[in-house]
Length: 395
Ligand SMILES: Cc1cc2nc3c(=O)[nH]c(=O)nc-3n(C[C@H](O)[C@H](O)[C@H](O)COP(=O)(O)OP(=O)(O)OC[C@H]3O[C@@H](n4cnc5c(N)ncnc54)[C@H](O)[C@@H]3O)c2cc1C
Image 1 (cartoon, rainbow, N blue to C red):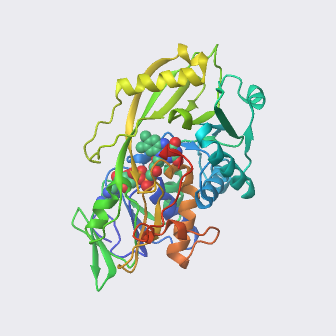
Image 2: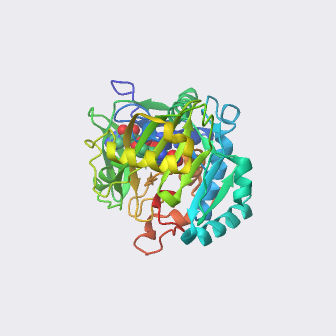
Image 3: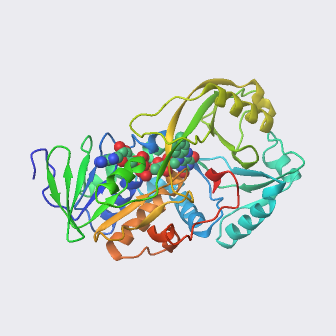
């Protein structure tokens, strides 16, 4: 053991203690590999994870992300039995709303989701009057409904994975940044910590969220990741007018909202074009953007025109050119893996990603899902994932 109880050697080192790193470490332990160390520069869930709006829905334009989201939703809904702990999952139903130009994409996506066994359907105005009478749908708009979707609690999920990993014997070192990956002859040899220690290992998994580009650049790997600031604002809901509402992906107006407990609603909006520095970016919200989001909310749920603004925060999406993650071994460095670039999707996918990436590391291949569409080389090969929609967060 090193001075602060880190082992000198580990079967794998995970860099980053967000929901992704913690889910991967947990699943490695489940596969019989508990001798791992997770290094976290700050504290668990303090990166994008702790700032997530945590919406869980399956509506995507491609099969692999839909499958990962559907597998994950079933874990969130039964978290205590499957993992142990609470996920804070609240089933609200999820409505995705598009205007005429996106109608074909919506219908194609719903057909693909149904083929994959996801409970979902295109809904008419009459259906909506029954399912969500507080929501206004305009003449040129179409909608689809997922009855099982909702939102969960990213902090609870992450600490639950971490607690289960520790029980299995894995080590989580908070306030202990990785300062470099030791490689020789194009192979991982170990990880250096900022405290000056070295853990010998032949396997490193980079799950460092918005910091991943820097971590990989240190070993000469250029990965196309771009942090994008996304804002979340909370309003108090006039509960006598709007006692409840579903979670809504409002592609028509380029924003999303969901209930937050019994009398609040959170709205997600405003993907800035500039490139924020993960160490230093405005963590509050822009009042003008929040006012514009609230106007959109009142248009979609007219009773919400009596809501009032309570506050908000910003966080970083780590985007790739197609807004989908990279889940792969890193070409050119044996033993190096990455689970990065989750944009606005990483939380809802985390249980299935944790399992699939642990299997990729331990067995060379994920068991239940084909991860090849999310391979590292797709950008160089110009074989990007496609979205049916202009609002990229919905991808
Ligand atoms: C405002 C906002 C709203 C969102 N809404 C949703 C949503 O509704 N639904 C959804 O599914 N997803 C949503 N997301 C996306 C989701 O939250 C992220 O994709 C997910 O949390 C990413 O998890 P992660 O573990 O990859 O990254 P992070 O949570 O950022 O974790 C990375 C960790 O790595 C650590 N780290 C960095 N460098 C080092 C180092 N050198 N050594 C050790 N540790 C290091 C960091 O401190 C951090 O804790 C949202 C994100 C934001 C910001």
